[in-house]
Image 1 (cartoon, rainbow, N blue to C red):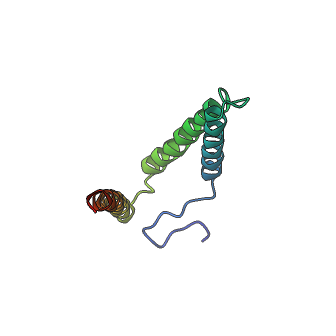
Image 2 (tube, rainbow, N blue to C red):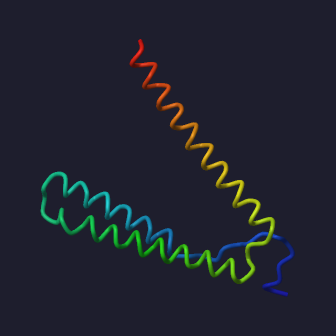
Length: 109
């Protein structure tokens, strides 16, 4: 039957939240450029971009909570979400270690 699952993974339906987040981030960074160069719209556009970003975060996180309450986060999905967060934190640690290593190497030599 169509719609029955034969696996433990959660396949996401198409969503507009990533596009809205991208537009909000672009609007915010463009507004900050306008603000830093004291151009027209510099006091309005960053706040508009921040509002779009906050709205998209609310939209995205509420969908994640709805998926969790619907039972879409099986034990396999939860395990992979943990692995993803661990790998993200490890990549951030490695990035900052590399950044400070380069800084100290440059400052010593």
